[in-house]
Image 1: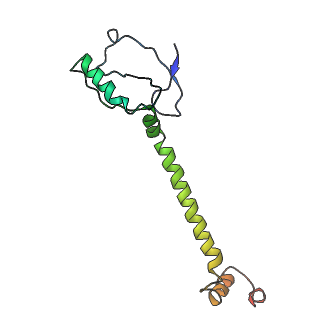
Image 2 (image 1 turned 60 degrees about the horizontal axis):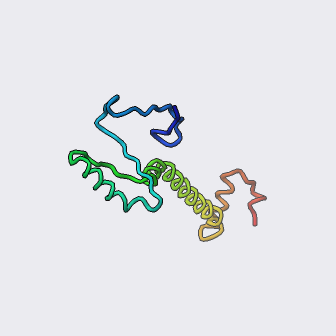
Image 3 (image 1 turned 90 degrees about the vertical axis):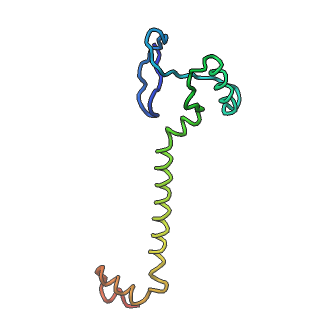
Length: 126
């Protein structure tokens, strides 16, 4: 009995046993098709072949492996994008804070800020 990953990426593999449909019936089945090229154009052909086997079979949720992996990694990608966005925002705010004191609001405001943080009068005189 081999192991396979079913569920989400990052989960521990669980043992799986494949049984014939007549032995353990479920109204749902998964069909996996291997291709050598781009699989997206073949989804229509696979759907047609399934419908030719039995008109009552419903072919739903046809996806490629890349699409399934993309859905599984969406949360991690969004987390990384938000982390990068907040990092860039922090860098911009830090740059404004470092260089903003010597610009338009320098002088008296800078002196009050230094005094509020405990700088003595001798160190504040320019």
